[in-house]
Image 1 (spheres, rainbow, N blue to C red):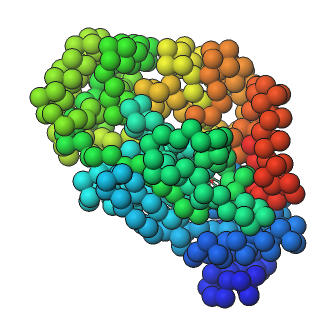
Image 2 (image 1 turned 120 degrees about the vertical axis):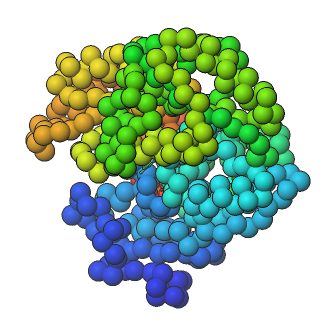
Length: 446
Ligand SMILES: Cc1cc2nc3c(=O)[nH]c(=O)nc-3n(C[C@H](O)[C@H](O)[C@H](O)COP(=O)(O)OP(=O)(O)OC[C@H]3O[C@@H](n4cnc5c(N)ncnc54)[C@H](O)[C@@H]3O)c2cc1C
């Protein structure tokens, strides 16, 4: 390995491996960590791993929340792509931005913005990498209007476990040229190949946007308002739901009060466009639809930025103050109210504190199970009982287990219970075809 990565600051073997690459919950140690700076180094490392039957786990920024980037069987090679972080090319005419996989989402968004463009996907973890976003099909705030990461990918280059390279997609808008292998790698959680280059679709940056906060006394009214807004044909750039308790964690973290002191359930939404009158009109019409709101605030520019930061900080506030597990379920948008009501009832049944926030415009709810004082022995039982009930209900409502975080390790048990056997067998067959020795991130998803 040291013959492949000749710079000793980029290869760590055995006891040299920095502790933040080890799994804190396991005694197994990883074999090595490499930080390649180009595709050739990746190919050589992969060939070495293949020859020596070593498991490979690819890592971006390690912000994944499903455990899919976590080494957990011991003796893995971790390929950390954080040094492959450059913009390769901006093609303004086709509006395609080609980047290396380790570039941070925030860098891409800033680069696009500086060129009058927008990269639409907007997960809250701005320090995550584009390679990680592709591999988890990350969603975020703007999925309601612009889709998830998948909808902004024009092409990928991928190295397979035998060292061969796939070139998938192109700068074209359409593609009906055989199986869509590009889509297969999006959301594959590093189990099928290593993404070494990504062609992103960028769009002209909308010139105007307005953010409004709607406060409601009741969660169901808030989520029903979402359906009314969408069914009237208004598609906000972002349409987020959160409850008073969730935003309380941001208030504590940021040490400042939320902008509204009315209501208990909130919708925060931004409308964008290139015609200011039209954007203003859309906000007025949304206010008319939200006739049961107890507070309707149109936010000034700085207030909007701060309120979005507050929304983005719910998760960080939770990390800072409590032990919890975040879920990532998605239901058809007309079932969100039902789902939220059910999570509360289930919390009471299992004696568990439950919060909800999420991307209500696309049906993706983040239910938070607050662990509180449950001991290490008691927690797995409470957790399992709650999840057994919850996932059964989610599938009954026509939903799915993961909207944007992936299955990883943490959701595997319930994914396998609720996914049709034939689907899982098809996934296993694909995995076997592309990685016959099962060396690439094994044990994740299924
Ligand atoms: C505070 C916080 C907020 C978050 N908000 C959101 C949100 O709003 N929306 C959302 O969808 N997610 C969110 N996440 C989850 C997480 O940020 C995303 O899953 C993100 O896409 C992971 O990117 P990463 O670079 O950290 O990847 P990692 O965590 O390092 O890896 C994630 C997966 O991708 C694989 N992978 C990474 N790079 C490559 C590559 N080049 N080739 C092949 N496989 C690769 C890994 O093997 C692993 O399976 C949040 C996380 C945190 C901590």
